[in-house]
Image (cartoon, rainbow, N blue to C red; front, side, top):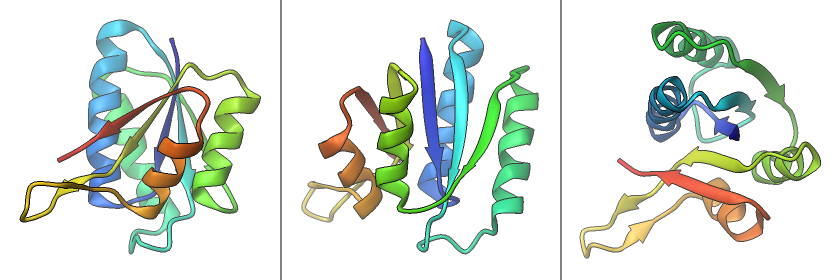
Amino acid sequence: MKVLLGIGGTDDSLDALSWAAERSSTTDDDLTVAILENPGSDRPPEEIEAEVETALTDHGLDAEIRHVEGDPGGSLVDLADGEGFEQIVIGGGERSPMGKIQVGRIAEFVVLNARTTVTLVRT
């Protein structure tokens, strides 16, 4: 399966990285990692890329890493649609004190606008 992982440097996106790397190592998915511009993250792109490379190495994966500029949600959806990805994986979603799922702006945009399957990795 051709899988696109969107990662912006937040803790939930790093959880999605771990999940996608683990899954790809067991299912032989064709994984591409898109490092997104995320104003909600304090991690610089170089640090995010180092985390990605470590996770890929730890799972014995050789995945393409791309730096995607522009609006993170729109850019991820455009990339997935334009290149025929079969699944998008993103982090996001926490439970409120009332038990309802709360998703961030980027995750919400991707879930609502992607034409392909979206897997939302929640912590």
